Image 1: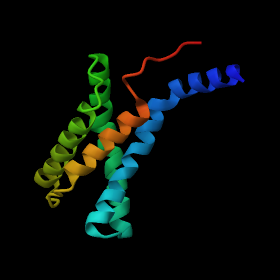
Image 2 (image 1 turned 90 degrees about the vertical axis):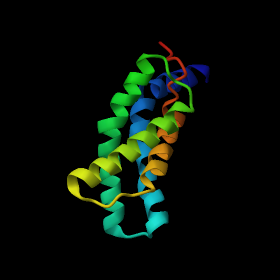
Image 3 (image 1 turned 180 degrees about the vertical axis):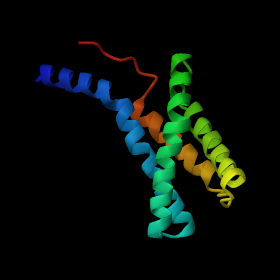
Length: 127
């Protein structure tokens, strides 16, 4: 029984970062849908943009903070908030899209979920 639990723990240590980056961006369509109403086009656009922004800004930011040992929970929502606000302003200035005031909240939610799933404060176990 203990061997199976150890193998499961080792497997989770290997995949928790990827699981976090796969699951956390799903919060954006939920938050946007609750704020502006559930519409299929809005949900699809917010889903695609959330994954794009998470990979473009979130992954490098996560790697940077983790490499420097900045793994406290409070940094994750702040980093997500900054990424969300920066993204909505870049989209407004470059593409002419309307500014979404909810983008900061959605980014903070993604950052918090990402941290909860990935748990960068916990060390990796070895076999």
